[in-house]
Picture 1 (tube, rainbow, N blue to C red):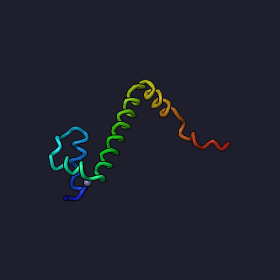
Picture 2: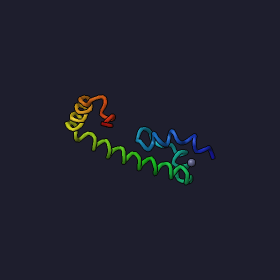
Picture 3: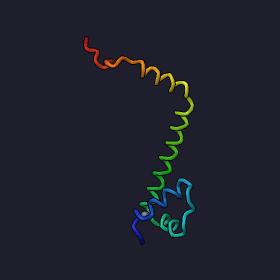
Picture 4: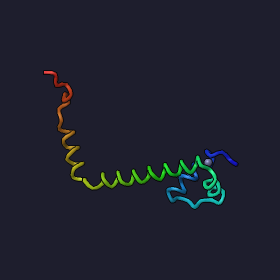
Length: 82
Ligand SMILES: [Zn+2]
């Protein structure tokens, strides 16, 4: 059996829907707990990223506001020792 690391790149592409999985890759995935865990982690991360991204996309006006506020802030905001 080949080392897991030699499958990881293809595995990621497959999980992202970029490529079809080869029989070799599928067989490895079925039999390797290490790569199964890796695939699960990746799926969970992708889900999380998708959710985070859609959260960020929604409040476009808020992002505008925030960046305006940031630009308007005085440079010495953190030095409030008086
Ligand atoms: Zn593996």
